[in-house]
Amino acid sequence: MNLDTRRLRYLQAMGIQAWGLRRPDTSPVETAARPAQGGDVTGPVDGLDWDDLRAKVAQCTACSLHKGRTQTVFGTGAREASWLIVGEAPGADEDIQGEPFVGRAGVLLNAMIRAVGARREQVYIANVVKCRPPSNRNPRQEEASQCAPYLARQVALLRPRLILAVGKVAANNLLACDQPLGKLRGEIYEYGPQKIPLVVTYHPAYLLRKPSEKAKAWADLRLAMSVAPAIAD
Ligand code: URA
Ligand code: SF4
Image 1 (cartoon, helix red, strand yellow):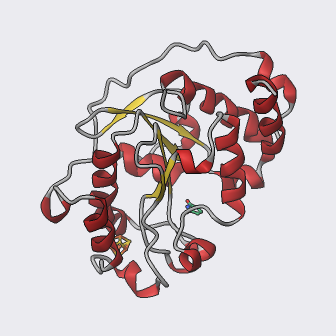
Image 2 (cartoon, rainbow, N blue to C red):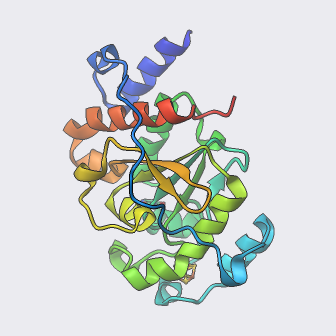
């Protein structure tokens, strides 16, 4: 099976019609004029290696989300990954299993990853906050701020070639803005002092509710692939 046939199958798994393939994305790469935001690693996590960082997160009580968690959800995937995918927060399934995106949204995220030619284990997946918010509410600003150094350190350790922010919460936190997702799509931003290219797309949970938006998500994924392939070459 060649790559195109395989991709077609995964696009179908994403629920995207085959005609989506007929417009290869040649849109120009734009870099946001705004300065890079966030991602400063300061304080106690600066310099930690993977194991120490994971251990620190596991014991963290820096915000009130620690009270409701079964366990922290640190992140999963390849440490040499080309792509870092960032979601919002663990849900019930993730809180129980200790791994991001293992519930219904995760099934669609996996299809999105296959559509860009990678397997889940070949990218790195993490969230803005590492503990499940009560009743799956959005993380509050102070919670996201307390947790941000952990993700920033993950980025510094990974040095991914691309960050894909899925959903408004991830996009707004990583870009330190409050724009609706629809306004943020279609551009290439930069994250942190390392100026890692960042692309935003819809959250798979949103795509499950609104499958008609999947074609736009596929356009976002093609934009992301134009920055860096999902598998390191
Ligand atoms: N939604 C997210 O944003 N992250 C997860 O890990 C699971 C669902
Ligand atoms: Fe710590 Fe982040 Fe969990 Fe808050 S969400 S307790 S900052 S690990």
